[in-house]
Image (tube, rainbow, N blue to C red):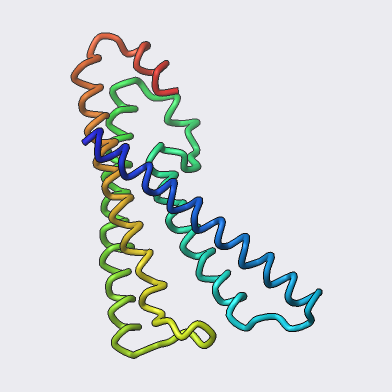
Length: 172
């Protein structure tokens, strides 16, 4: 599982850098064409919008990989170690459930409906379902990362039954 985690992280990092690079080039070209040439391309605004959608949603999955999401942890820090572990496991399971129901199932339904209806983007002539495909993809990635974190929580609980303070220091 560790190897899969590293491979997926590396792939996501490369994909995000690539998407961001294309986004920057696209926006720079749009600004250059608008103010220097006087004729902006019609597709650049739409491409920038779709790239930003992909960047934000895939970036969310990437951040989930190293637990970089925002959290209010005031009450969490007041709990005992065992209760912190239980709450962390509950949170991971809730994230898995959310990602499965909303992102994977809902995203696949959204893709199916837009592809079935034949919705096409006006400037790029791209089926909108392909743009929405990032939602179930990111949902699957978030589920993978949450399962990975669950395994580590369970492993740490078994290994560190007596050394609560050491585990807390390594998690911070």
